[in-house]
Length: 251
Image 1 (cartoon, one colour):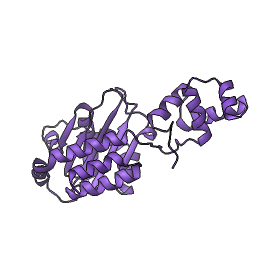
Image 2 (tube, one colour; image 1 turned 30 degrees about the vertical axis):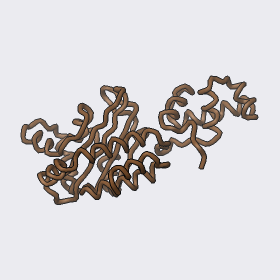
Image 3 (cartoon, rainbow, N blue to C red; image 1 turned 180 degrees about the horizontal axis):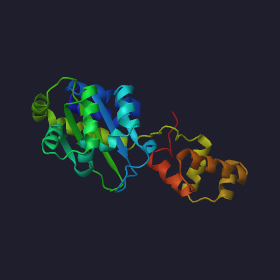
Image 4 (tube, rainbow, N blue to C red; image 1 turned 90 degrees about the horizontal axis):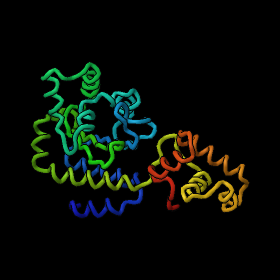
């Protein structure tokens, strides 16, 4: 598949599963067999937001996911910290340079030790542009265990621009597709009630439109707030919209 054919495929992908499966295969063609994509819309100066709200796509095994994500090592990962302050592609050679310069924290060295144990020692990180300080996305492209970073850098010199282009387009496509974080799913009734709220309807209006009592509408809205882990209905509408859960085309 040529790059143009691949970009045509990406633009027409209908689901995250379809998109991610093919992207993993495409990056493997370039020698990157372990990928982790992450995106947050709730970044602050001191936090990346609730991990349950992250968009996370990966083909890493469960051992790595448990350690890197569930134990919170990601927050101290040197290349993630780099990605938060930069855009574009960064060679993991930067980790060796930071280590040699003595600029790594004890927590960062713990992450490096974990990655070395798993064999994640060579690769690239692509940090995506965002128009908002609250948003940030990046993808980690890991080379096979035992691959030397110098070899990966040489490969990037030849194909890096194409790889950046493909990952940027995939990132932009991901932002348009529905994503339901773990324990954040909405029922059809909850979604419909939020849609009417987003359209400016009152509880009484929504009850009439949905053929329900006002109390039942309030119940659906409360459960929607609980599912999305927010305090107000306005926050629920915003979060559902950001996750593309509001106006889902039923297949």
